[in-house]
Image (cartoon, rainbow, N blue to C red; front, side, top):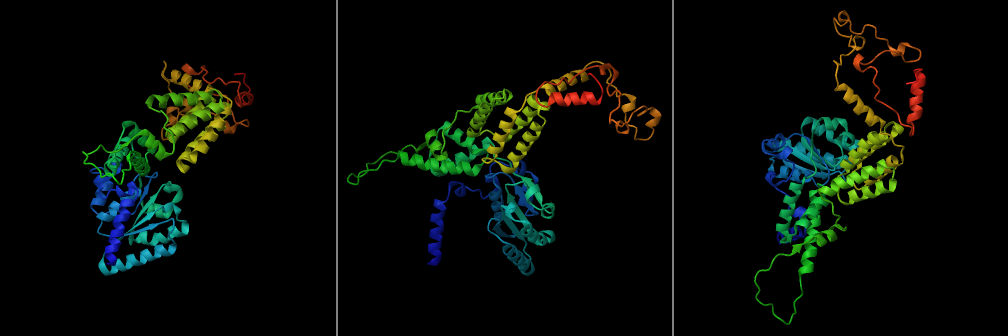
Length: 448
């Protein structure tokens, strides 16, 4: 009787589970996305199917299928499968798994796979407790983390595991998930509603299915009409399934949809860059907010800021490139939504920095010269003189070592003769650039 009630409770619980859990794949072929890892003939798939998988760490953003993949492995392996979450597991829990694995191997010759979710949450001592089992092969570790293992998993454990990066799901994969979700929920959806779900999903399959589940419930509720208890229901022909529209998805997401198609993508980023170039900090922040609200990739925004730091600011404020690069790293390390603070700080710094395009003009002028006439031969005194017979060829002859001079600079030619008199870099009068240029000229005692 107890088993009967337990089975009934489990069935009811499964029906109440979030859509993402109800649709969790149980076979490799059911997993969407990650074709580079799980496509036919790919090494990871072959290892899983042959049940010869060694210790691995699955690394990637939320909702990319790390836990799902581990559960598929659990269903396909002949080894015992243990599961822990680093959020609440302790060293004691790890040692208990290792003890059971030892008994299992000794008594039945059966290996053990340990799935450790959120492995980055383990501190050094907890990770060290895993090492003996992983090193001897007593257990096969499958770790899952949203953080870069290079920073969050200690070197000894990392060196004994193969890292597999799971990428955010692309639009095609997200649309497949939406189609499965609509079928499971017994609802339909407008094209605009589906596009909004996919756009706001930002590569996170779990988020897309969770939002769809809420939107479907809202649509069913809006379409239901209570019938009078005194009037028996008339025979009705089959009705159309409830329709999930943009309003239902907006309600599920808790936000209003912003029109942001392919044209808007290019137009808004153009306005963003031009606002910062024009030193309008508030406009820069406005367009940043528009892009973030529309689900634009934070990586894409950060890349454009790194480019702008050299293209439009350059030597007028050399620290701008450092700030932009740090922002790009923060986006990878922190992720949204918190990384919006890092992006906003970069926008404020770059917009308020002095502007100069002298670096941009200099490299294009130099490229034009490099592609121009002449042989472009490296002068003999600059050629590599470290290999055998180089001296006999005259390589390095006449080269003057700048560090041998008390000033740290010597007057010698560093370009082919045909371009030796050309000037590419012309400093602006903005920010730190004039002072830096004046110091350069003074140190070389030149009026260039």
